[in-house]
Image 1: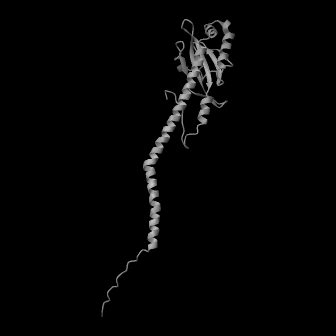
Image 2: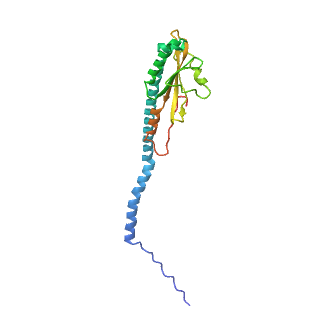
Length: 221
């Protein structure tokens, strides 16, 4: 009985066509992989930093615009406190009431976004308004924290942001302590400013990416 030796195995050779096809696939995929990896490691951080810088510059521009608006409106209010008839009326001379009302109407014409101007005595009691008195803020005519800031002539204060549910618009109150010629506080002036310009600027913002949002804060956060 004889044992037959095992036949030698032959290796299957890869055809030239398959080799060329594999090389072509590698030649196409390899540059693509290099591009993707390079984009993730190099280009993406650069583009992200550029986008952040553009958003910061845009935000800074918006802040400067809002600051300029507020400074101009506070200057309007400071002029109000220098009107002679307003000073005399708040000092107790009712003969100046009509003239004081006329001077309030001049303030109303400085900006179409003013809704009303109001004069209060030093304790916060309403004295005179133009065109109509818009009322107090909650249970107070003037919030106590605002009233406490207006103990010296020409001091100013700005309220928190309120929302008018009827007009669907945000607004703020700006206050100034109106002094007598002798420097005592004769009363308080309030200008109510609708934030139309700020509202429009926010709604027209188109540079933010999808899913992003922004908010406007004062220096106290």
